[in-house]
Picture (cartoon, rainbow, N blue to C red):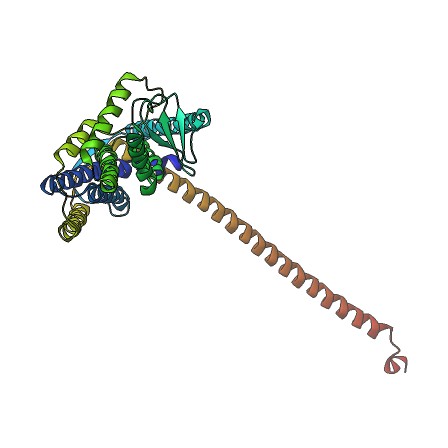
Amino acid sequence: MLFDRFDELAPVAVQVLVQSVLQGVALTVLAGGMLRVFRRLSATARCTVWGFTLTLVIGLTGWNWFRPPASYSTWQLDSRWYVALACGWGAIAATRLGGLLRSYGATRRLVRGASAAGPKFAISSELAVPAVAGIVRPVILIPQGLAGRLSGQEMEHVLMHENAHIRRGDHWVNPALEVLCGAFFFHPAVWWIVRELRTERELACDDAVIQAIGEPVAYADCLAKLLEFSACAPSLAPVASGNTFRRVERLVENRPPFDRRTGYPALAALLAALLLGAMCGSRAPALIRFRLAPDRRAQQAAAVLARALEKERQADQRMRAANEQWQAVVLARQEAQQRLAAADRRLRTAREKLRLAELRNSPDPLKKS
């Protein structure tokens, strides 16, 4: 019964995943195209757009489970293919999530091995770039030897950038993104959006530093020194540093983003367009529908019919046994009634004989005279 239930759900699952990939890629292309048009949108607003897009992509996957779309064509596969796909997805997802747990353990060991240099930052010899480690209690890790290459003001800029990550809550977002990449490893749209999110949040933190110091060229020189240091120092722990070249180029160009009066309406228009695109995508028919091969379906139908016939045969046997028992009870009752009637006749006969005997034995005055 469990295998039959799996056979029913497996084609639906494959169809949902394929349809979700197509919808997600189309929605991601729409978001990327609109962001190329609105290039002057701030990095924070672009992060909002990509985060909203990722939410819609995941939401479409859940929507397809409850509202399976119609399709133009049908692919018929044997159930063994569905079992192989499900097992393969589970094995790869479990491997990636296990790697995430190991990475979390390595990060904890990295934090414990670092030397505290302040209330919220420490010095580590196993990093090539500054990074924020930890979820509940985030700590800024500074590579050993970096202080000798940067001035005091540049080191302050580095700490401001990492503190911007903490204020944004990126240390909470990172594990969530890793879990999504592990569960949706097959989804190109998820990988694309996560990559853009990681890039844009670095730019957003750069904007926070520039807004505080007002010197984009000096901060770009600090990033260039960080890039030079990370190229010379061995990286023993994988830490995402973002596209540093793009960051430096952006700071040198110093293109002002939209002001609030223009940026907020543009952001609202982008989010509304994405929501409309997701609604249209949720109603679009599926290009392919998966179902079991006819022979497997025939075998399943035959098995269901055989089980139904067997249950009907067993029910008939129980009914016949019950009828036989009832007939036996009726016959026993009739025999008991016949025996009772015979006993009643014998009793009446005995009473009649007793009355006649009493009459013969009683004194008869007429007979005596």
